[in-house]
Each structure stands twice: as C-alpha cells, then as structure tokens.
Length: 571
Figure 1 (cartoon, rainbow, N blue to C red):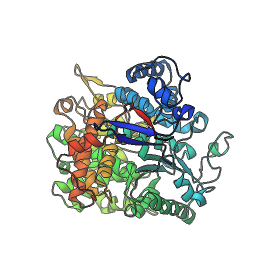
Figure 2: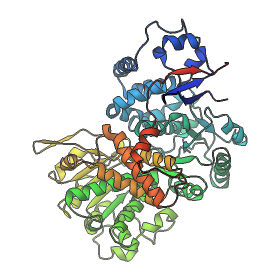
Figure 3: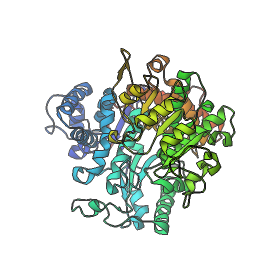
Figure 4: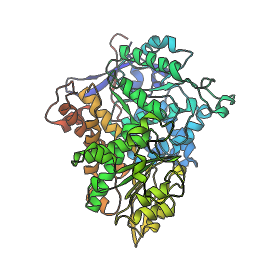
C-alpha cells in the first residue's frame, strides 16, 4: 500500500494524502513536518500533545537547523548532522541545503564524504536504500518489491571498489550513493520519492575493514570473475522486471569493471557511469570555457591526461568528441591526447595493457627522437617533448603536478590549462595558488575540490570547481522527463556545451572556468533542456515533449516545501 499520494484540489493546488497517523507519520522523512504540522493536521492525524505548541514556519525551521549546523566544529560532525536531518525531514533538509548550497556542498559531498565513507560503519544511524549482498541476492525479487516507494525511477548503485581517490571502501560506499542522490534532488529537483541508493556489497579486500569488529558489510574477499558477473546480472535482471525504465547510475566501479558493466547493460536499462561519462562531460565543459578565454579551439591543444582509470579514459573520450565537433577525425583527435598511468606514458607495446586503455595508446614510434632518461616517457618528459598545452589530473596522486611539470606546459603556450581534479582535497595534483605563481598568473585553472580565490596581480581570481554535480543531475532530469530508453554520447556532449555556455563572461574573465556553486540549480536546468533536445534528436525519447521545455521543468521539478496533508477517506 502506498504510504502517501500527491493529489490536487479543485483549484489545482497540490496536497499529500496519507493513511499514516501519530508517531508513525512523523517517522516518514518525506511527510514529517516536525513543528510545522498545522493545528488542523495535528488534530486530524493524532499528533495533539506530541509536538511543541508553537507551529513553526519552514523558514523558522531552516533558521534553527542552520544554527545547529554551524555549532558543530568538524566537517564530519556537520555531515552527520545533515544526514540525520535528511532521515528526519527531507523537505527541511533540502530547503536548508538549497539556501546554503555553496557552504554545504563540500559537507554532503566531496571532500567530506570521503571521511564519511571511511567511517560509515561507525557513524551509521538509520537505514536508507537497498543493500544487495551474496547473502540475500537469492531474494532480490522480494527485496525490490519491498522498497519504501513503489515508483523508483532513478538508482545510484555502487560496488564500492573505486571510491573517489581512496579506493576499495566496502560497505561505506553507500554514503556516496546517498550523497549523489541528494545532489540529483537539490540541483535538478528530482523527487526523492522516486530515487533509491543501492549498495552492491560484493565484499572487500581492505584488511582493516575485514578485521574491524564494527564493520557492517560482508566480511569476505571481493567477488571476481564469473561469480561477480553472475551477481550483477541477477541484480539487473530483477531490476528490469520490477522497474523496467529505471535510470541506473553505476557509481565508483573500478577500472575495467566500470566499462564492462556500462557496456553490458546500457541497452538493457538507461545507464550512466558518472566516473566515466559525467567526469568526461564536466571536463569538456571546462575546456570549452578555457578555449573561450584563450580564443583558441580544442583541436589546437595537446593534452596530457594523468590518471588512466575510468575517469581518465572517460575524459579522453569526451575530449575526442569535442574535437570531432570541430571537424577533426577520431584518429587526429586521439593523436593529440597522451594518457599516463603509474608506469608512464601508455604505449601499444606495453605487456599486459588493459583493454580499456588501448584506444589511447600510442605507437612506440611516436616517441622516437624524444629525449628520455628511461624507456618509457614520464609525465615531465611527455609534457616537454609532446609540447603539451593542457594538463589534466585524475590520478588521485597528491602534488603530482610539480613546478617543473607546470612550467614545462607553460613554456608551450601563452595560456597553459591545468586541471587538478582528484578528490578529496588532500589528493589534489596541485594547489591553485602554486599554479598561478609558477605560471606568472597565465594559467587557466580548475580543481575537483573547492579551493579559495587566489590573489594575483592585486585582484581575486576565483577557482572554478570541475564538479560532476554540474552535469549528472541535469542529465538525469533530462533522461527522466523524456523517458529516454538510452543515454547517448550526444546527450553527454550536449550537457557539456550547455554548461560551458552557462558560465558567464564576467566570471570567465576573472579566470573561473565553471559557474559558482550557488548557481547549481539554474545550471542544471540548462543542462536538462539541452539533454532533452538531444534525446529527441537522437531518437531515444519515448515521451512527446511540449515546445515550452522551461514550462515543463517548472511543472515537474520537485521543490522542498511543506504541502498540506489530508487523511485518506475512511482511514
């Protein structure tokens, strides 16, 4: 039985109808108003005497909650507070988050979420989402039937192996799914009642977790090979049967698995891998902004992608699509991209080369004549010998972009582009202040984590944050509103172009290549519109759209507001 249903009165005003009463009503986060239940609602739903006499406005609750938030000293304590608030009252949580998005974004997501992931078993408070493990996969059909809400349209699912820059974190990866879905709602207005975080707990190889008596996950080594493939297939098969059109975001899968799972199921269910596709799209948007600032083109640049995991290869692929739009062939575009991993520049003669890296591997003849100290070019040698102009960091390696590397890039162009994108903050490849100093203020800089403005030449220069939150919420909204049967490459490129166009000229002139974080919701609307138009163009939309897409967004986007409650007649 549905716990509640949204309806409209004779004048078209929305209200919520439910059969729940008393304390049970206050325990459902999407219905709980706390001290904002009206006197009439208190009488109707058996709440008299259970709440303080004063009926608070939502603004009053926001003010009280914000004061509590500011009273905590550490970022992790603030994260725990916000998560507890979300578990108590979704409307209040999102109303508070929307009002203070720039301040709270680093708390609910990167970089603080990395601490929450590492400490997840110790800060665990309240169940949220679905946990699928070897111990219950045989009951997956019944588990999906028992999800809290019957109309799931969006899932973020993780197997926890490639969390941010901190790797295998076992059960703690569920915190990432919860955080990502929070951003889908805050940024793009996707109703939290249609979202579901999913933990695919296939074990962990992290010894300290397996030895921790308080660890909440499955205590076994990670599934691999056929056992892993069968587990994922059983999950997807059941998901397709229960929610046949659900959009699945595969989150923090490691290296080859990220590509394999996406490729295997992208035509079974609408699928997105944010680490591969979202990262690529947000980086392409920043590079397009950089070309506006330098009055150049993508095809005039030479790129080093430092970090050849799912994110690095995803970025390289999206840059290729950007150059193809300018008229370059796929071959010509790939020749301008140099992919580097822990062993150095990726060349085709490397033994044991992973399949997903092969498309960006260069022939050994390409480096013939380079001045090298060893057999394989290093980052510094590649930057110098290949005349690199764009330095992209997705390695998770702190301080990987030293002064010598950045200066080598700056020697090749008047506008060196340096993106230090690894998260959390401690893993950033370089600090923006250093990059400005090493390049005499010439560099165009972006980071993955938030950094303060850099004072240079007597003026503040904001540092744009290349956060995937500028892409995936709007992309997801566009997919849901068009009921797209597939997430196409064209939709991702459209999202990149829309975000780049949204970054205003005044901010760009100051050096920031991305919008301010407090413009996240407005940016997501523009991304969603571009994605919807592209879905129609790519013939994957299954819903006929009106001409007024802005009006559609206005009508469909969920807003954090307390709606009137009415009791189901006869209950």
